[in-house]
Image (tube, rainbow, N blue to C red):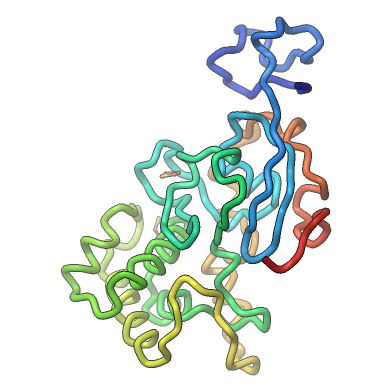
Length: 255
Ligand code: FES
Ligand code: FES
């Protein structure tokens, strides 16, 4: 049981000592660390994380997957929505240790390797279902789960299905239209909405721009949800590979 730092703002920490080294702390204030193995976007990732590392922080700060945004940090806004074994969950309400051995899909896991957007991403782009885009990765992930359960939803069902995600910009009209369009396109192809897009139009010029707007690549909006003071004990979340380097995980491979 080793650690270098207490989490920032740790409720069990001593005021004024949040950044003291573990060797200076009483044993009952030292947070334990745990090895976890999680399949993220089809790749096995291994890390050693503090017991209280949130899944959202694990994805963003340890794996560099900043497409998962963080807004409220207490399960209200839906910005942090990811798929856990195919079901939409709030990453800010789960601990990294709690998903050991399971499969997580983030917004980065939807577009094809050739850049072709997932049908839900493409529909948000085509229907302009976003303005600032901060909420969009969460909406897209929620829509993927929703459409897997209801392939032919009515507008009323879409509104209810998306009601767990909050948008501060759009008024929801175009978001509803985007989910409706995505449902129609998915019905045509029979694609599982929760699966990565296979890719079919590598010559499309819209891929890179739209992908960035969807949050599928690290972007400025994705990094402003939390400041450094709220990032937790990143120094103790030692990955087998380096932070932000998804390609070098020890034990990685297609799962
Ligand atoms: S950041 Fe997780 S629900 Fe708002
Ligand atoms: S597009 Fe800005 S918060 Fe939804």
